Length: 362
Ligand SMILES: Cc1cc2nc3c(=O)[nH]c(=O)nc-3n(C[C@H](O)[C@H](O)[C@H](O)COP(=O)(O)OP(=O)(O)OC[C@H]3O[C@@H](n4cnc5c(N)ncnc54)[C@H](O)[C@@H]3O)c2cc1C
Image (cartoon, rainbow, N blue to C red; front, side, top):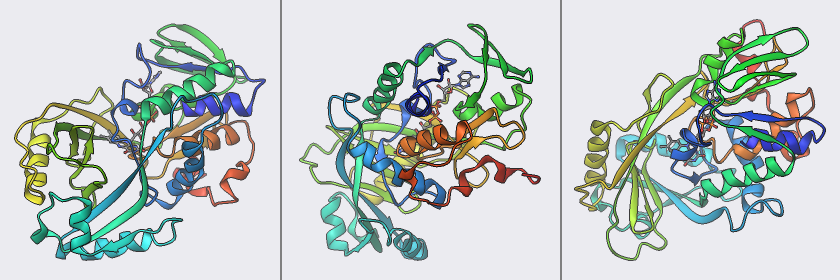
């Protein structure tokens, strides 16, 4: 949706149509995230996209949203003695951010998340300047901006095959046949399938399932509590109104599908969270799962296919597709028709985002 919005913004003369297989938008991964913005996350190329997104998320263009998209939140990572090296790496990666990651004392860590079991904290680090994102409102902002720019949305319109006729593409969809000049492949977990259906070499996308669930909160004032995670996100928990959102941070390889939560993953998450905290979780209010889809090197792939330039990739959003959405959509729109990255990227190295890196001949 972000790519579609930025395409109409950057190319007002282009006719852009967004084809969605499902009857509603955001039914898959976008509607299933933990909705947290953390700059100290993911690969260097992906961080370029997050950086290019932050100002937009803080201050979206006039008329796209009715309320702020971000609410301040801190993120805290906890490590055991054996995970000390991982903690050093995290602190080093976060040291050059505008709000650098900081190491906390155990007392400070307890202040940021009082239910922690103090005796299990060896080290703790805080990301001071994170945020909860209103993903529904952000998605609607892109929809609104896209429609305002003349874009059209067709739902229940799955692309089953794309045939290149030299000048452009003939798309066979469940809603009929459509002729287009350029195809943007933003099909999430299905990205490689769409490529194959277009006769384009896939790039080796790997969808990985992650389960999340809601439990009752502790029933006290949780204002100021951090999103708290075992380092490496092998469990995490954040308060969300009167409930707590929890996850095992699982990354189970999956085929593209409508992902469902696994009871075992929920049970293991409860065991880990109860082991690390005094929350004493006994029952689950709701659970869901989504596919986080990664390229082989974990960075997004954005831009024209090196062998078929009218086939443009926008895939591999992994676990940071919401917080990178502005940067990814903007870069896509910059590159889709052969242009250069916008000034927003400040001349950053984007080579680690281009799809050609996955082709030995590219
Ligand atoms: C539990 C969990 C927690 C997460 N937490 C965060 C977080 O805190 N912060 C963050 O930034 N990110 C987070 N993410 C990741 C984020 O949600 C994803 O990176 C992002 O939503 C991916 O968006 P997408 O548009 O690529 O995929 P999707 O939302 O899955 O969209 C792809 C769309 O393509 C459609 N499609 C597929 N094939 C076709 C076809 N042939 N024709 C037409 N349409 C097709 C699908 O129906 C789907 O609607 C989380 C993900 C999960 C699962």
